[in-house]
Image (cartoon, rainbow, N blue to C red; front, side, top):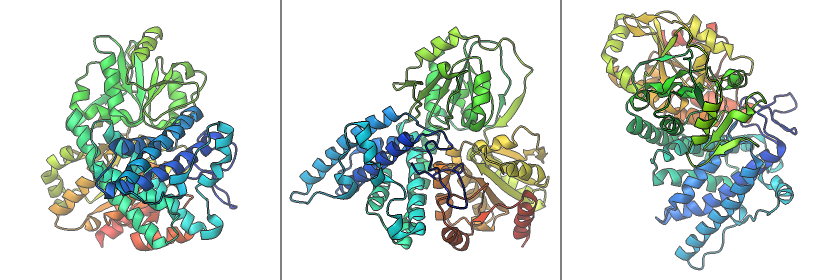
Length: 551
């Protein structure tokens, strides 16, 4: 296997990437090779899908399959080789259906080659023999590290776009232009492009597409669950039977809440589901008791201590430990060998498990945390914010957002939040906020200094806040007293970064380390062309941001 798609990848002077029998994330080489084969097949589907979209004959079911299948290959999502064998077989059927539709619409057209002509083996050993053709570094000797790195940027950004689009899919929101954009990128990758200019433009095109996808997801979330509002969320347990729901998926959380309706079982969120409490239609559910735990990388300790079943939705799964393996369930794109998977949205067996487990024996003293500062909440006090800036009460805004992780260096974000001057406002989103969101950061004239915008899925909301402030001050986003300090981990973050670059947002500080698939030359391009800046120290970066703003 070879994989370097996430921040935790093995790094060495001889070359970075997980190239051992098991990756840092826990993915074994068999699963990694099967994921590569699935992506290769999706490129083949994209070849036909792109042409069908151009003919005005899109296949919505195929587009949805592609988005879900790509999501399963993100970091810490699915580790089940059996599920990938099934998806590889299904991908061949989808590809053949599209091929037949395309040939019927264009009689006499020669069949497409490359991934579109790939025939997967039926047996696992034979599939693994085919894996070399699908390696992310295929063709390295011919085109070099820079081209392969840019291909990887397109692929990993595309994975993030597909994941966000799948979140919207499950809430009934999709657009043909999203399917067409994803198909275009897959078709390009299927041709093994070697032109750096073409690959850079495709990266920006994906950024623009992701902006539309995030807008779609925002509409899906708010249209289903209402407009997020500032909400105090309990972070200490209540006596009684309990279920924990982690990941990102609001629909699965809703289904769990519906499954326990009329019972005394308490449902707790974990990780990126903390912002779910700010949605009125979820907050109104009496069984939603609070949030338990922190970011995804702490789950093995936190899940072991939780006295009930756990449901892992969407992504951020780490290998389940023996202490809770028999009481964790997966749903959606998530999977782990031997762990029970709920594919039909029926969480009755989770309710049964909750009744069989002890739950919390007593109620702990209440502690709360404030969430729910999406764009509607922030912009409702925009006048107050603008006056605070004009009066000098607010000197600067720092958006400290993105993924958390276990790698050394992430204390930078804690230090940054703690050392930011008291006359600055901290916006945050994603699970990186768990590094500093339990602290009291005070307020400025009644405006909380720490404003939790939501999940990484809510990046659209953060961008809209920046655009609205720029409009109010009659300047560009880059002229605002605003600095973006981004922590990345996986492919959703790559998609958001491409969106920021596509929107012309400059001087994004990125860390804790830069992607291993970006060569020094490519990093130089990002620095020169887009102003991307690797983080240094919290003190130095705060000082540089304030100096740039003052200038």
